[in-house]
Image (cartoon, rainbow, N blue to C red; front, side, top):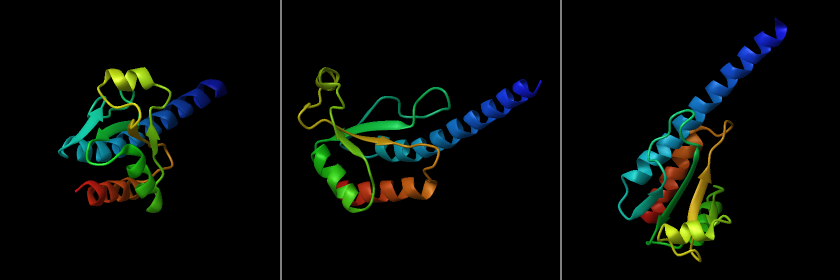
Amino acid sequence: HDQGNRHSRAEAVFELVARHESTLANILLDYLKDTPDIRLLGQDHAAPGQRAATVAFHTRAMPSAVIAKRLADCGIGVGAGDFYARRCVEALGVDPDDGVVRVSMVHYNTEIEVRKLVSALHNLLG
């Protein structure tokens, strides 16, 4: 009986985490999908269990590595590159030498942090 109770509690925690991560991802996704010249890769809406809170995008306005560097200068950590999926990136029509910007949100990220990211992207990319 105790094991079943622990399982139920664990499921509830995972559900809360998934909802939180989806909420965070949607803040970023809403900005990216409505911003000209940003190409969002993957679904443009996050729902628990349907889309990971990892978002990849590309823009011709600035190289992906430059975006990552400028965000790092603002204290925001994102990745840039092909993420060992060079042929996939190429197949999507993105220059694999430029790659994409990848943002991963997890349960300990906050809405304030994601809004800071959106604001920094807006300042960088106009």
